Length: 440
Image (cartoon, rainbow, N blue to C red):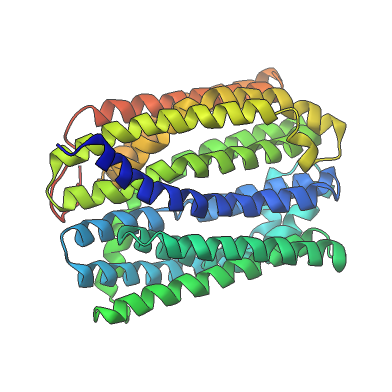
């Protein structure tokens, strides 16, 4: 068995650049939230409704990144670079096709979706404005997912990091110019995000294509591989659908509670997303290193990595909890000028802080099982979690329990995820060795 120091070194080598790359995406949302939040509470509520739609559309396709990482890392670990990058290109073609279709669908249904998720007519109008423009960024977002996943699979964490940082800076600069300089309001924030996302997509796709050409992998679309990538993504899609339904249920309940709870929910959700992406850095290490060790036929190494990463998940979760608890009274002032929104946020953020250590373990185990290709189990577990969470969150709305209890229910969601993931990792069924991913 490898020394713990070597295991830690491997985890850190992947997790640190992954952390900085991951947090840039929610930083875009946080930047938009801060910029739009000072335009007014209806605008912030509109951003909340639109963000749920966009987050759901893109989140449902996260299998493009996760599936690409798992598949590419297995072949990379087995020394088959050409196949690894050929599969990466198939993921890009799939991302492009899905992105175009979902962009059209999002734009066409923007009015219906905005109205369903909004708490008032004014909020609905702002949500639709943001959605119509932001739909143009959907293909770019999916290409970024697929390209980032592929580069993680070959242990290139540096390129996604640099591209993400550059895109985030560009987003902030453009949004400030468009929103306040040109007085475009919420449309300016959406326009800045669209341009920044396409900048990142162009950068990352170019890098993947160049790497593929260096190992003489075909860059032409190969229908069989594209269809296979889509088929293997189905279990992860089901898993993600259950997670997104949970988040949408929370937003619907917040909207029923009124404009202030909906606006506060946008800030809370943005901060939770930021923390989740940060904690997910260890999960990315889990995806990448699990795929590599299983691809190399190293079961003992896989178990050692898993155990060590669980410890890292607890530690990072505690750090996140302390930071959020300390800053909870201050953070609301960054995102809203409405005292009512600020007052609603503080107790909710304290509840979220308590949940973070559990979240750290959840994200690690989720990443490990994704890296192992255990999507079928994750899909089944997601259905179980949704069955537990849905009654909790709906009860908050029915009983008019208040905004803070919405996030107490979220704690039940995290606890249910932890129970299902912990039960799975205790066994060895998910540890399938070689380049063939598990289908169980």
